[in-house]
Amino acid sequence: MDLGIKDRKALVCGASAGLGHACAAALAAEGVHVVIVARTEAPLLAAAQRLRALPGAGPVDSVAADVTTAEGRARILAAHPDFDIVVTNAGGPPPGDFRQWDQATWYRAIDANMLAPIELIKATVDGMMARGWGRIVNITSSAVKSPVDGLGLSIGARSGLTGFVAGLARSTVARGVTINNLLPGTFDTARLAGNFAAQAQRDGHTVEQVRAARLAKHPARRFGTPDELGRTCAFLCSAHAGYINAQNILLDGGSFPGVF
Ligand code: NAP
Image 1 (tube, rainbow, N blue to C red):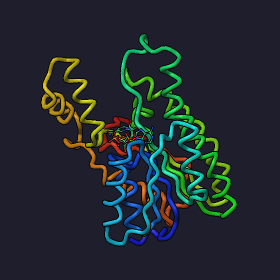
Image 2 (cartoon, protein in one colour):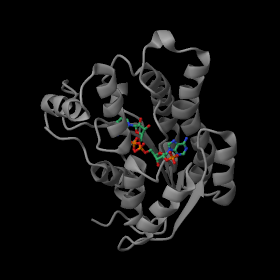
Image 3 (tube, rainbow, N blue to C red):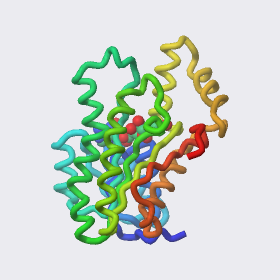
């Protein structure tokens, strides 16, 4: 299917690896002009080269920046002021016991996983509405819908973003701009490997044991592939998805046990 977004311009954050990179790849393969962002330059440049090599890829630019800082966001937007598509994403906060979290810890999580996406939306949504077309996708987490003890920083910050977006999206769609959230369950990325390693160390198990235990409980008996999430993101950004708005789209292989 032609997604109808060739030559649109997209900002994809957290895109040198994992889920963000998969979103950038799916958009680049549609001929979208993709601007990818991550903090570390060498893997970012390598990621940009991989994207340029995709069949049908449009132009690919990269900006090494921390999207959780005002300075980082300003640098991205100074280089590329007018985006048609924005995919917000950054590293998630660490798991832990809320009794250990002080105010500075909470503010770091809120900055990264709530305020940074809101600031990027603030900087881009009015231009999209003025031009009559736009797509904003926030990568959040299945934990917003299926909370897990120990992920309070992530759930707290991302729930704030989710509530904010639910309000805003109703005021943008009449001007052609949709805002949706993608809620990943368990996806095979470097971050997941890191979480398993931390859990293995905490519980005195091997990483393979932790991984096998998680797989045994998963209805799909596998984790998601970044490509699956990336292509879903590209569809949400497509010309065909203009009536999908203010949604929280769970990609968890059926782990959520409810009907809706
Ligand atoms: P990942 O494999 O660790 O990739 C993270 C990417 O984001 C890297 O390119 C990283 O590069 C970049 N990044 C991190 N912090 C950044 C920042 N402050 N500014 C700019 N770029 C930044 O992670 P992932 O698994 O794709 O996860 C992406 C997001 O989805 C995270 O918020 C995670 O919590 C959430 N999530 C993931 C899963 C899963 O199963 N994988 C499940 C639920 C939620 P640099 O480090 O060089 O900046």
